[in-house]
Length: 156
Length: 252
Image (tube, rainbow over all chains, first blue to last red; front, top):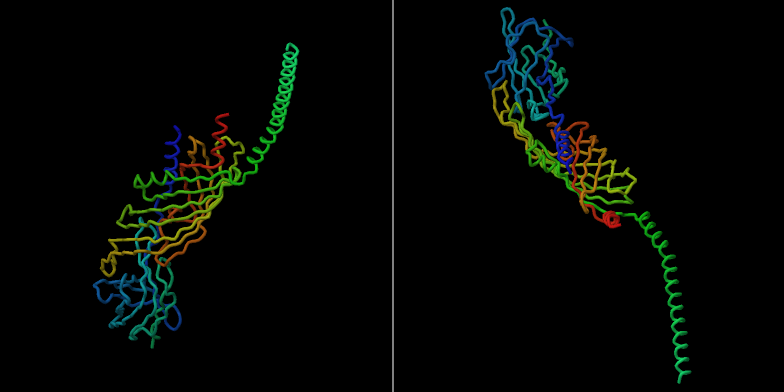
C-alpha cells in the first residue's frame, strides 16, 4: 500500500513528460514570383515597387536588380490586387495583378504561431510591361518554391 | 421362565451383534465409498479448475486519469475497462474513456480544446503461472477515436494588410487509430479489489487530417505524434471463480 503514491506519481511524471513545443522554424508564408522574358529567367535592372490595393502597405519597396519578388498574401480577402510599378531611367510604368485564392488557416500547436495558407485559383494582369502570368504552383505555404512566373514583353 | 429369559438374552445379543456388524459394514462401506469418491471429487475439482474456460470477469477504473483531471492537467484520459479471464492466462479487454484537453499556448493566447470518447479492444496475457493473486501482464490494444476539436487565436493578425480578425475554428472533425503495446502488473489488495498499473507504448496507425492542421491532442492517445507513451493506474474489481478460489484457499 505504501507504494501506491509512488506508482501514481510515476504515472503522472510519465504522462507529463515530453510536453514541449516543436514549431516549424521557417514559418513565413509568402509566394514567389520570378521574372521571365522570352522564356528565360531574367534580372530586372529597373527599380520595382509593389503596393497592395486597399491598404497602405508597401510589399516591395524600390528593389533593384531582382530576379523575382516574394510577396505576402492577405489573410482573408478572396482576391488580392497588387500594383507593380517599374522605374527606369526616364520612365515609369505600372501594371495591376489580380490573384484569386482560397484562404486556409493553419496551426500546428497552441504554442506555435498560427498562419494562413492559400490556394491560388486564378491570376490576371494588365499588360503595360507584363506580357502574361503563369501559375506554376498554386499552393502557398511554408515551402520555398516558385508560384507565379511573370513574363515581360520582349524588348523592342 | 429362566430358559425363556436365556433365549431372550441370546436373541437380543445376536440381533445386536448382527446389527452392529451390519452397521459397521455399512459405515466401512460408506467410508470406503467416500474414500473412493474423495479422490474422484478432488480430481473433478482439479479438472474443473484446469478446464474452466472463463475464470472470471473484472471492471477497472483508471485513477491516474481522474487525478490528472482533478489537478487541472493540460489533458486527461479518464477511462474504465471491462475484461474477461480465460484460464487465468488470457484477458480480453475492452476499454472506454473520455479524453479531455484544454491547452493554452505558453507564449500566446491560442487555445486548443476537445472532449471526446475513445475506445480500445485488445488482449492481455498473464505471464505469472502461479495462481498467487499477482499478475504480470503483456498485451496489445487496437484503439480509435472520432472527435471534434476547437482552436482559437484571438490575436490573429494580418500584419501585411493591417487587419486583425480573431481566428475561431469550431467543431473541426478528427479521427485517429492507433495500436498499443502494454506491460503491467496487478496484485490483490483485499477480497475482490485489485490494484495494478501499466505502461503503454502507442503507435499511431492512421489519422484523418484536414487542411487546417493536425489536432494537437488525440483523445486516448495523448499529444499527437507518430508515437507516444502512456499508462494507467487501475483499481480493479475482480469477480468470478478466481476471486472465489482465492477465498477458499485463504480458509484452508
